[in-house]
Length: 296
Image (cartoon, rainbow, N blue to C red; front, side, top):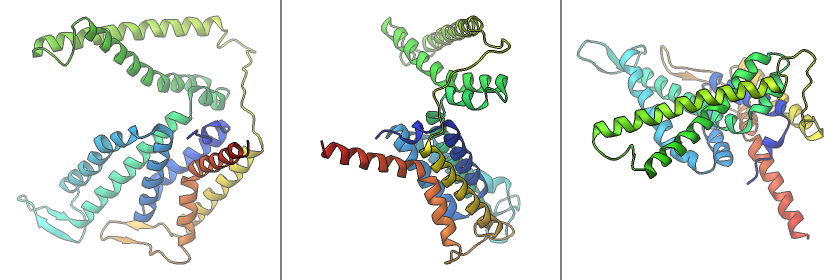
């Protein structure tokens, strides 16, 4: 499925990710966290494909479990003591729930950022912040671009070394260490050469010169304006819900959270629709495409 949301104006993309990441950090109610996790996962699969499932199993789930296990060892607050350690400190239910909540929040934010890196490309980032904070936007853009590029180049170098008998996964510990150091040395050299080439290219194109103009294909059309109105409406509703404590949740000194009622349920519906906006947009475009194809 084509990501129609990625084709929207960069400002729309940025407002959306700023909203969902911000609300994932602020709205700690269990239902809100489940909503953020499910929606972040669905959109990540839509953007990155099924390989995101491997990322979830290998990294995200262990992160939740690790946070759930580590937090009670250092945090002994709470009124519901399950047992006592040998040093006399209690293991409380509240500290375990807080660890699960913190882990779930971290995983949802990581999945949102994985989609963010796919949608908010370096040219979009420079378009948005190039005039406001040119130096910082350039550094961030180059950093975000460098990480996947470095990884791709390392895979290429590793395959090339493997073809001449220097496989980092075979041989004794000494030979594997030498191969790994050799690959790392090659990557450092490549990084320095790439930095010099980038600097020369920017200089030849007049970057930093006074009066230099920029060209962009991005235009705010009617669809983008409609999406902006929708995003700001959702943000306003969720802020109102937070002020009304519809998403309130606390672990200490005891677990307490806002009950789901007829008055608070609409806030959760709006939150789910906000998070699922890109997926809904993709489905809408997919349906329109299939209808157009069937009429040909």
